[in-house]
Length: 112
Image 1 (cartoon, rainbow, N blue to C red):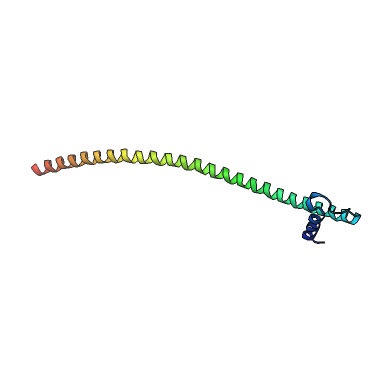
Image 2 (image 1 turned 60 degrees about the vertical axis):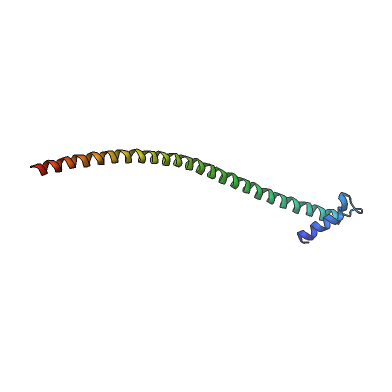
């Protein structure tokens, strides 16, 4: 007998959670099979659920780690931006000094 039919039979026999009529030996055998199938289905569902929970936990750890890495990279980016501003200021000051020195040299050569 197919599982679905067997489970429907069990549902009919247990109408309202109470036996509708006295149970014969063959009914007990069918009920036992139905219980066995239901338990197997429950165990498979539980195994699948536990696997899904483990995968969700694993994925959450990955996301948490990547968020942590992103925060660290963001700090490094801000530091690099700060260093860029400081180095640009030093470069512009050095460029002015160079231009002033070059101008003085040019003037000195022009006076000779």
